[in-house]
Picture (cartoon, rainbow, N blue to C red):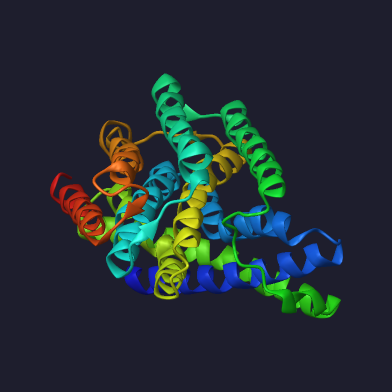
Amino acid sequence: MSLVWIVLGLVLLVVGGEFLVRSSVSLSFKFNISKLVIGMTVVSFATSAPELLVSLQAALDGSPDIALGNVIGSNIANIGLVLGITAIISPLSISEDFYKLNWPMMMLLSIALYFILKSGLIINFTEGLLLFVSLIVFLYILIKRSKEKDTVDIEEVDDALQKTSNFKIIVWLLIGGFALYFGSEWLVLGAKDLALSFGVSERVISVTMVAIGTSVPELAASVIAAVKQEKAISLGNLIGSNIFNIASVLGLTAMIHPIALDSQKLLTNDIFWMIGFAAILIPFMLLPKKFEIGRLKGFFIFGAYLVFIYLTFTGE
């Protein structure tokens, strides 16, 4: 039954996330917000909503390992699973923004998260606020640079949503809200039950199955982008998702309810995998062929992810 709750939860999270994105973008058009800003802020926040609801629900339910493991595991999956598979399908070219702004921000937040957890074994309101403010500053710089350059990797914004009626926006918001609420409830419930039935910790289930589940939308979007040869978009969205997971998901969750570190392995093992997957992208970008992550590197990254999954289950 726990698997049924997890599957139902994930389906509702995907559906809820999609309706929230549509309603948020339509609403933004009503306020005459530019496509650039919508793509970088509204869509990014809306696509992070499933992870946010799962982490918040877990923290409120007294399962901090699911709240933290969901984000750490999701960031590992975004690179190891999603980027790995995407690069195997089609080599990814890397833009200048990646190593000048996006990657440094991802590394900074990853390392900051480690020291925040190590210092007090909890993410409190102040630390959550600092994480969230860092995201606002990052988005401000990103939008400013993008307006100057007039070229940027942004989330796709559907022009047809400009003509959406107010009634439809309200219906979409309600569907999205209810689906996200019940999806997060059922996913957390299923993850707890599955951990009990498998005899493993909530941390193991959260950094593997829950994280993979919440990364499915990124996997689908990136594979489609790779097939269409939209290479820069795939990589830009993945790195952006990792930044949002730490700064927005953990930041906002900690501001509502402090996230305590329960399992030490999240700090002594999993977070180092997350930092390692992020760090490896720079040498991979430079060697042997510059500014490209090809199929061989994709196989290596995906292989490393399979090793992580194996060690997570066997090392419990």
